[in-house]
Length: 97
Image (cartoon, rainbow, N blue to C red; front, side, top):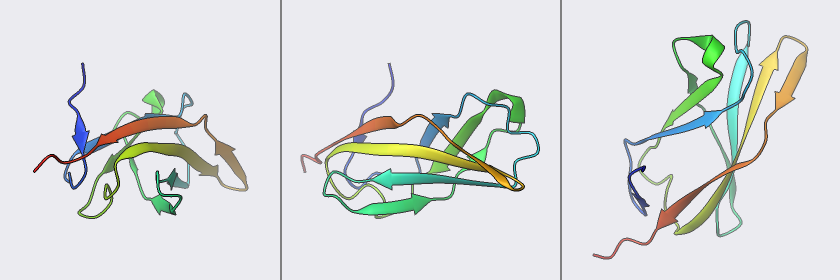
């Protein structure tokens, strides 16, 4: 079981599997649709072993500012080509303080 994510959390790792070998990729981005309709891009880093296809994003202060479902979609570029991954979601719970 993964730890719950709460509004205001930061410093946590959000991992997304692209299900492709990232060897030779020239750029990575996570397109994010927040529950309030705002769309942003996050800049993830790949795992050290590029063959895993895992991108990790370290949430910064203000990234997780709304409770609800966040839709994440990876985009990876390989020179003149790009790959758009399957959408994934994370659930951000309200902070009960």
